[in-house]
Length: 169
Image 1: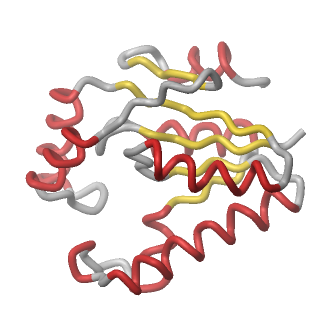
Image 2: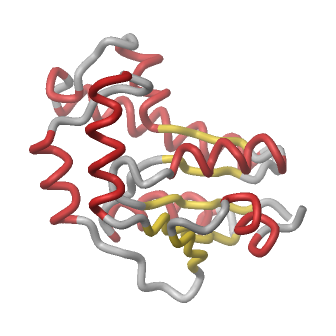
């Protein structure tokens, strides 16, 4: 049966890396807020250049993609920061409305490891940048999941091993 996996973790914790592995190995549909944002505003858009109406449009499009895929019997990964319980609850409502199971996936990477990745990314520009201020504020505001239905990836566990332990392969 299809379900919704809601990823959460601080920036540069490895959410997208792990979500892409699940997408590749298990055929899950990965819906990434950043991909939706870039599809609407172009790949060079900076978060601070998007106003409230623009962000509302991004989130509504993402929610619709999640709902449409769940309705089509697809298992969906919401590959977004989901830094607060409120953000995760908004996504969870989509699956609840359809009577589907939701599992939160907490990517638990130490802040210093994530910060090293942020600094490395500033040099090699493998992905879009996050300002030091945004990184710090997100880290301080992050609310780890406390629900019962949570799978936790704990850095530095090998991703392949973690997938075998936690997902039907």
